[in-house]
Image (cartoon, rainbow, N blue to C red):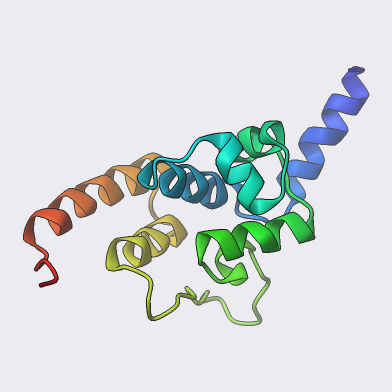
Length: 139
């Protein structure tokens, strides 16, 4: 690939309103939690396995139709995966009532601009461990 094409590709990714880190982490977390292979998920979502591999690693930018299918498969609102410009300085974190608490907390931590991505990730892992240890199990 020519240097100019590489620069253009990087620029398009950096301008994308899609939260690529959130998307890739969500895909990987759900896929591994359900014990599914890339090919199985790709079939469920209607993508090629190589495309899903790139998205799971944050190396690709999905088109709108792909993003909508992924949001549906992840059972998250599309607004969670897209950085929508808001007239106010505060951004709303959107979630569904049936989402579990660790995923909601993770969305809040990732959205906190005062935390570096590494710090947010560490806090998410700590919260998940503590939550799993202390949460009441369904009977």
